[in-house]
Image (cartoon, rainbow, N blue to C red; front, side):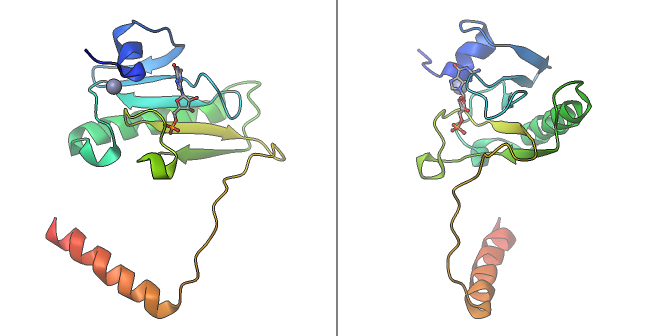
Length: 141
Ligand code: 5GP
Ligand code: ZN
């Protein structure tokens, strides 16, 4: 039994306002939009986080992110001065629905939404050390 709400949307067990779908990907309106026109893009197969999605599927999802982001700029009356592409992985990063998804969020001048990011202190040496460690993982993959 799959209790995932996004899987239920894919299966038609829960309603959603769909804007695009193909064999691998579904795009639909967020139920609690940050701005009008806030769209979610998901793979039709359940993967909980970005790193679980096979590369070919990720590419299919990303194509739809691009398609939706472009459409949002073109949509009459939407008043889009900018967009954010947001993708949360893990509760620590604010993920609430554990079916991997991208948010495409239209932004308006002065809309007052802000991400609550802080920065950490980091010297050039610290950034160099982290670069080397991350690069090791990329090279090992
Ligand atoms: P997360 O915090 O996991 O990145 O974002 C989850 C998003 O899913 C939120 O923006 C939330 O409003 C949206 N959401 C949660 N439940 C539903 C639902 O049942 N239908 C739709 N369309 N969106 C949902
Ligand atoms: Zn799911």
